[in-house]
Length: 265
Image (cartoon, rainbow, N blue to C red; front, side, top):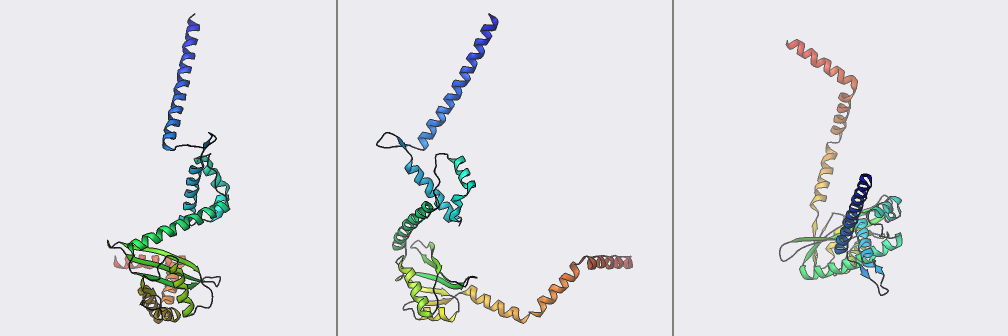
């Protein structure tokens, strides 16, 4: 009888433990349901489309913010990570990711237009041209203004290819075309550029827009001219540094130092 009674007690303890675990799981599920509401379709089945879209937008934001390649979503490691975070989430494919980023871009442009219209009266731009290693020309334009509360704002208008040839007229028309996208062409009164002749002429022929030379670029030119005058000296300093860094000369230097110490003693 004692054995049967002990056995019943053990079974009862197991049942209590099992029920407590079940209660814990139920509590966790209820808390999760409060944080992440479900969506019920017309058929009565649970639909997670709004949550799926929210997570897809998060992936798109991560790709754009960190400058990652679109192919990241095809990697097995990415899919494994997503599965560990939320097994119910279906990661976007390459085409879906591009579409999501395109939609977010259009939304951001409209929001930016509205913000500029409300806060910007006059502004300045900074622009530059450069050529990549692939011999492709690029133009970059940034837009800067102060709000009525004296808050400094700046946006990147574009970093895009610019077709050849880079004449003053082509440069000016390209800048004006990019500014029109955000409705900025009538608000610009100052342009900061380098000292390239084509860029200088492009801005000087732009009505009601003044040009300011880039101080960083001017300082860089001064440094280059100064380095040309002292060109022989850095080469000599480099050779002298290599001479004393060799193991042989290091040992000779140590011996010379020991000899000086002996003479002083």
